[in-house]
Length: 146
Image 1 (tube, rainbow, N blue to C red):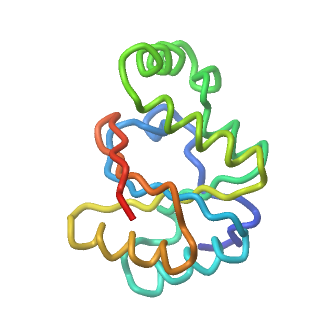
Image 2 (image 1 turned 90 degrees about the vertical axis):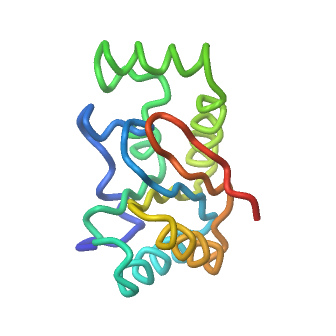
């Protein structure tokens, strides 16, 4: 990662990388920005993901990029969030992430493409006090038990 986690870089900007969209990512909350930065570096060091592919969200900008309402991603973003609110538990998880961001915590989303890597990424995130961990694929957030 070319910048620190504290700078909250690499969040999705366009609809193709809309949070909750297709893709396979492990999401986690870290209460401390230093721990978040160390977790990102450990994930990179272990070769589980390139730093540029790891999304780091924090503060108001992170909440805007998470885009709970879908407004920042246009009409399709709003439609999607409305459907999630009405038809799935995913919206509850996204709302929890948004709340964590407003409390000064950091959200990390790490791309994973195979189950063994996912297990190791989860283990690393927990080593750095990651919590509220969920696996996201195809608009579905599946909580990962401790």
